[in-house]
Image 1 (tube, one colour):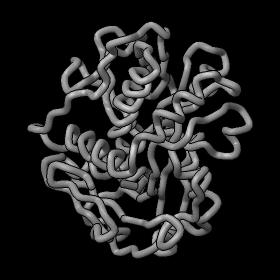
Image 2 (spheres, one colour):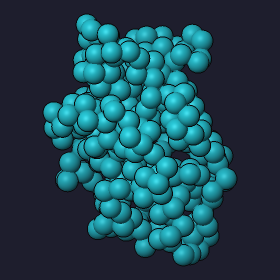
Image 3 (spheres, one colour):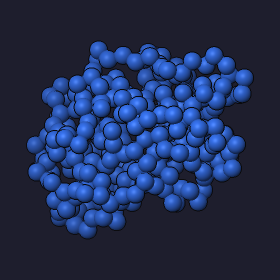
Length: 287
């Protein structure tokens, strides 16, 4: 996906296998699979990340105009800052959104608030976090949050963030309960049948998160992961799961773990060998 700052550098020269530190009870590592080369076969609709909007939303033109000003270099630097917040206790961040003029209304955004470094929940407003409107005393931060804040500011709107389960996001935007989905969501063909999307604000790469010492770390390609007896999970309702099911034949696909918290717990418990995630998510676990 993505120069990462604060000692985390992500580039074409990144080592194929990255191991995590030992501060956690379980040490994590990930298999770096490059989309369309050593990993999953994908297209932009699968791995691009965009803002979900109700079809015909009048905000799309202005959102696209703002997003067009953000370069790939900006994306990767912002993601680096967000990874650092989750992996380096000394890292800090100040939001770029100013909200000098909010005369155009409220930009109500839905996300899981549980998919770091794209979005997460914290207990205070440190490092540019924003209140979660439907969770008293809780705040959201992450790449999605900061992009949403900058979009809202550019549109002369205030920002409200709402926590939703993944499967409830599309119905919420169609019902008008929220204005947009800023949740690391890809504009897949299936989703485009239900809602509209802005232009991209990130490009992802899929990896397999596993435990340090797992034989999966010898894998050089998806084919090496696709072995009998291997159990790999992916979140229901995501392209991750669709790709895993469609592009593997020998491993066992685990499709009943609701979110990334559940998948990580299963990996800690040893009931799965790994799970599919975006590469920045893997980097946040390597602390």
